[in-house]
Image 1 (cartoon, rainbow, N blue to C red):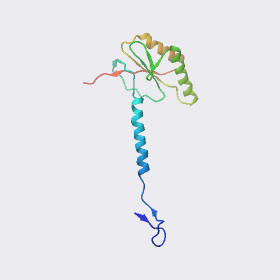
Image 2 (cartoon, rainbow, N blue to C red):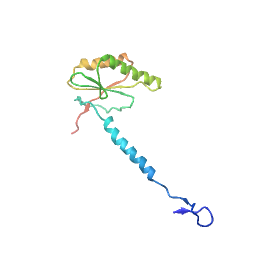
Image 3 (cartoon, helix red, strand yellow):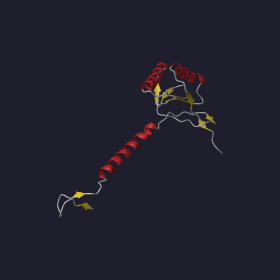
Length: 146
């Protein structure tokens, strides 16, 4: 379908059709990007958490997610934390960043293996309290229904 803007037929006709090729190209590139990045975001440290009857947790991107395995090793997301000083520095940096950007303080979400010693969890809680973390949550498995 073409639209004529002047008298008679001319080679300079304006085409009224929509070229969807660039739109399709952009959508395919975005699909590929999402397919590549989603598995990276969803990787977690395998931790056997306790089963408890509790309400679901709403995790926000600014929240600090820590995992503690059965041996007491602490992970920030999926990256291992080597020392308690490194953990303290990372939490302090997250708090400072939230304050600088005018956001509320981040929450600390702890996924601890059910076989880990409480001293490992207590150490993390103490470090978080030293760095002004006010809200903490424990991530657990829901009780199976049925």
